Every structure is written in C-alpha cells, then in structure tokens.
Amino acid sequence: MPVLSPQPSLYNDLYQSSPRTAEILKAKTALSQEAEQALIAHIKQLLTAQNAVLVSHYYTSAEIQQLTEETGGCISDSLDMARFGNEHPATTLVVAGVRFMGETAKILNPEKRVLMPTLEATCSLDEGCQAEEFAQFRAQYPEHTVVVYANTSAEVKAQADWVVTSGIALKLVSHLDDLGEKILWAPDKHLGGYVQKVSGAEMVIWPGACIVHDEFKARALHRLKALHPEAAILVHPESPQEVVAMADVVGSTTQLIDAVKRLPNPTFIVATDNGIFYKMQQAAPGKKLIDAPTGGAGATCRSCAHCPWMAMNDLQNLAHILETGANEIVIDEAVRQAAHRSVQRMVEFGRSVRK
Ligand code: 13P
Ligand code: SF4
Image (tube, rainbow, N blue to C red; front, side):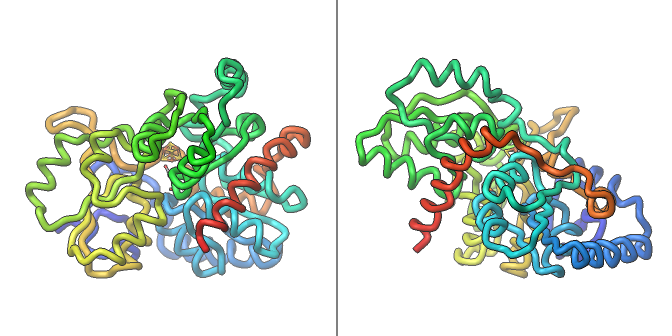
C-alpha cells in the first residue's frame, strides 16, 4: 500500500490518499530534514518567549499538528478551538486554520493578541456570504431567529442571534424548534438541510457550500463501499445530502475522530478533509482509513479532499509571524461587541450540551 505523506513517520502505512493530495503535500516539503528541525526548534523558542500558544485545526498539516502537541497547544474542531483560546492563560493565541477561526478567537478575547500564519486563508462559506447581502436576506425574515455557522465573518456573526459549529448545530436548532422558533440559517446549505431534515424545524437556508465537502460523490462512494463492505462511512455534514444519507456517523471533526475510536470496524471511509487522518490514526492505530471519493472516475481534473486554505499554514509562515508580529487579527470594536453576544452564546450552549 502506498505511503503518500511526505513525512511517513507522521502517518502510518494504512493511510490511503488521492494522488492530488500527495502532490500538494510533496510540493510543500522543500525544507531539508535538518532545516525543518531547526525551524521547529526556533518556533518553540519563540512561542515560549512570547507567551504564545498554538491553536490548530485538524485540517492543518501533520507538521503543524505535531508541533502543536509538543508545545502544549490545542488541535481540535472549531468549537473547541474557541473554547481553548478563551480558557488558556497565554497572552498571544496563534491560530493555525482559516480566517474565521482567528476572528472567533479575537471576538472572544479582545485583550489577547491573535496571530495567524496567513490572513489569506479564507473559507468558501465565509466568502459566499458577504455581510451586506446577508443583511438584505435577513431583512426578508424579521420573525426568524438568525443562526449562523461559525464559518462566517465577524460582520455576519454580528447580525446573528446565535453562532454554531457542526458539533452543536443539530442540538441548538432542535432546542430552538422546541421553543417554537422559526430559523434563518446561513451559510452552508448542506449542513442546514441536514439539520432541517433531522430536527423537522421550520428553516430558510442561505445557499452556500464548502468547496471541499461539496465534491464528495455518492455514486463513487457506493462503489468504494462495495469494495470495503467491512468499512464504516464517516461524513462531515457539509457534504451533499446523498453522501450524508450513506453515513454510519455524521458529525463534526471531533465527533468523527471519536467514531474511529468507538466503532469496532477495522476500516473507515472518511468524507472530510484528510488532514484529520493524523489525529484519527493516533486515536486508533491499526485501523485503516480511506479517503471518500471526490472527482468522478476518469475525470481529467481530480479534486482532492483537502482544503486549499488550510494548506496555506506552514512552518515558514508560522515562524515569520512569531518573529515579526505580522498578521494580527484586528476587528472593529463595535462589530466585535455585536458578534461577541452570539459567539459567547455558542460557547455556553456548547458547554451545557457537553455536560
Ligand atoms: P469542524 O467544526 O467540524 O471542525 O468544522 C470546521 C470546518 O471548517 C469543516 O470544514
Ligand atoms: Fe471552509 Fe470547507 Fe475549508 Fe472548512 S474545508 S475551512 S468549510 S472551505
């Protein structure tokens, strides 16, 4: 079985990835091993000297996740990243992920410095839901409770009653439905559709999509499952409805990692960004993980299960921002205060359903 990671020691040989992902990963390994080790040691010193902690998403590279572990940071889903940054005593939060994650950290922690390896790392959901258009959409539904996904800008969050992540979306909407509230949901249409179907809530849904999860294909997944009848299918709810319908487990990134630990299956077909394999293999060594299929068979351009914006975080730009203080997240204070209300509600609701 091919080992496609540029750093095989960070993945075991059960990792199966698309050729495209392998290409992307290879292109990012320009550093020699010695240079990389020296850079890692340098970053560790800078983190300590600046009372900084790394808060990284599961979709970042294995190198960044390993460094996060070694320096006492947090690797998690977007809800837990927000919680960790809020509770940790460090005065600088270095958020390795995409822009909305850094903004959420700043919304919750105005007194802390929040740096990101790159401010260019955005998200198609965030990009596809601009604040002015969203305000016009919202104005059409004045009776609805506004629930927005964390994958939005601070300006959109500032217009919301609630912010949610995939880990608590279903629970929150079910709770609001029990209270008799009608929901305006934005921006992910697949997650919104899934939540609506399961909860039965009355919802209007903004038509956004994640360019990574939207690519998973149900017909090819049926064929793959036929080759691996022993496998459980794990699906992030940003995936299309037909893919979600085939899932043994639908959940946030953390919930999918828990499923690999919990379920007895020896094999898992995973429909989410394959950066998650680093933690999945740690959680359940010996289990076989397979990327869910993206592009159609025979297609000339095969999409990969890897977020192009998450891939922009690397050791070089991480060292650069720690050295220079570049890429600090700054949010207009009136926007931050308005967004704080809905983000804080998310953190508290998340805490209450976890108990
Ligand atoms: P999670 O909150 O499940 O980690 O999802 C974030 C995300 O951007 C998934 O594409
Ligand atoms: Fe956004 Fe999709 Fe990337 Fe997640 S994987 S950050 S939803 S573009």
